Length: 110
Image (cartoon, rainbow, N blue to C red; front, top):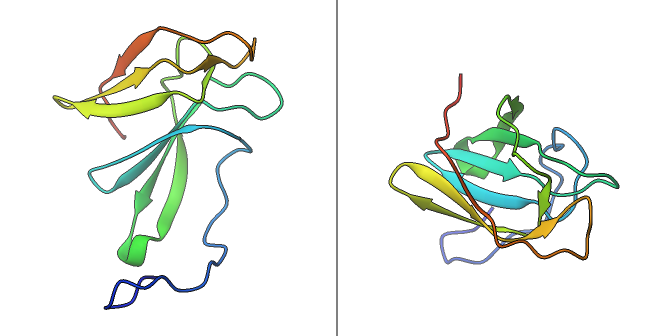
């Protein structure tokens, strides 16, 4: 946690991710942390969301049913008009290929 003077405390293990990954695209919105794509030794199109509770603690993860159309890692996410925009990145199946794709998602949790 961060104290009243803005100094960070010590790192501690807070929660486990819903699946192993590296280089995901991450975006926080409306009290939820969204983790999009990334890699885990193979291609991933997964999207997961975790509610951000008091003091920034993630209170459970859920895999979102809407996967990415293609596996993406190292992209950038932005919010615009109630949507996520996912810009560029790399094809997680062919790590050397840089993408020019722009995807959008209207995030909903059940």
